[in-house]
Image (cartoon, rainbow, N blue to C red; front, side):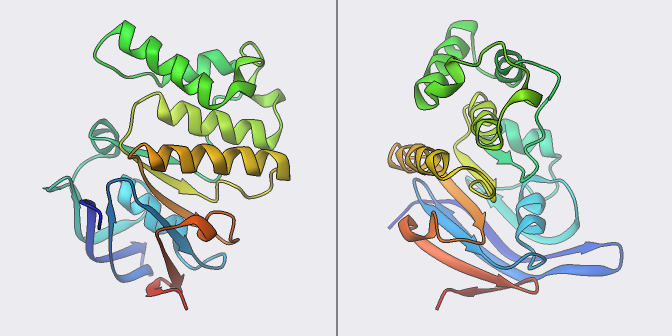
Length: 218
């Protein structure tokens, strides 16, 4: 059993008049890997964006560490420990790897942020060899590692990941999966949206989203 970290109850979401999510309820525990599967257009991205506070208009309850946060702005949710890695990665493509990492750094002191920087490079050693390379000149897999590493610079307690292994080389998929499983083992909570079974095979639970409605995997 996991201690509940995130609790979502009767969540509905709309883009204008079009409803994207219907009465979604789920929970994620501390150190749990929950995989959310579904086809394109099923509502996976809408759900992650609703949880982090960007994108659709929502109604329902989102409780994080015992506090209701559905009225909070996205930056406040991030400060509270929710980290989001979008499918399009949203890197600063004109900045170097080093600059992308440091621009996201958050911590109680410069020493703490430097330790987190070293920690991130230990998780993703390939980035240590690319410190001065602009993000625009990296491969898709390298960019994905940078996107996750940048989010980790804020020391989140939960990662929301939208298709983290989509469209990247198999050798980097394996490396990325190993890092995410290591983070799970260290107590980080993971909510991952994916179409494939790369992380689902290692998940504590798998849920399926179909046309904005949630059901357990078969």
